[in-house]
Image (cartoon, rainbow, N blue to C red; front, side, top):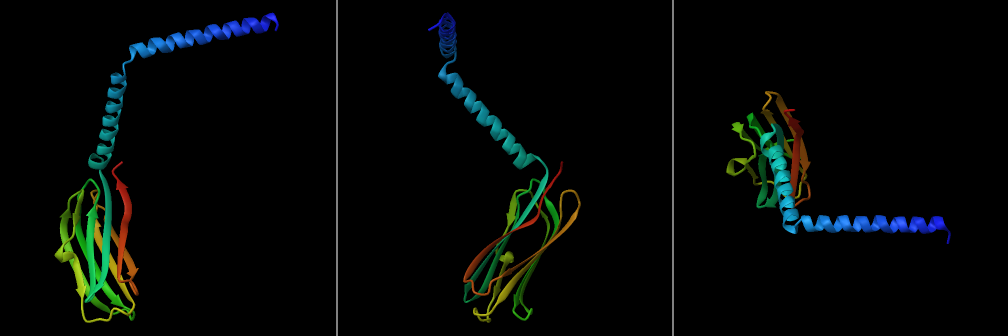
Length: 182
């Protein structure tokens, strides 16, 4: 072993001793309770950011959830979900139950002046029950929704779902993506 290798080894030993000494000093100064408290504060800060996005930043986010059931006829249950942070207005919602020859055999139409943000609408007036038609034929559920977003822009979406052999089916339709204020 030459003199250079010995000096290098001694220098590395001194550096590692210095690093070890500094780590020891740091661990004596920082208490585990302080680390836990910093973690909690960080989680609260992230929660505040997520809440601001969900509740405060103006945005439109409208979905239509539809459930089809075959019982003693055909049952179509619908729900309008305004997951945006602002109200939508002038809402017109239409559901048509159409047979294979494009004949409308059941229809539902409702209107709402306004649907507030973070609200969903469902219930008896959003249900369509069609009796007296065979469950073995091919049918289509046609959904149309018109509304005005928080910017004053008129929107119109149309969705179509085939339910020919299904005894039950669930559909989620996203209306025109998300409209951000920014």
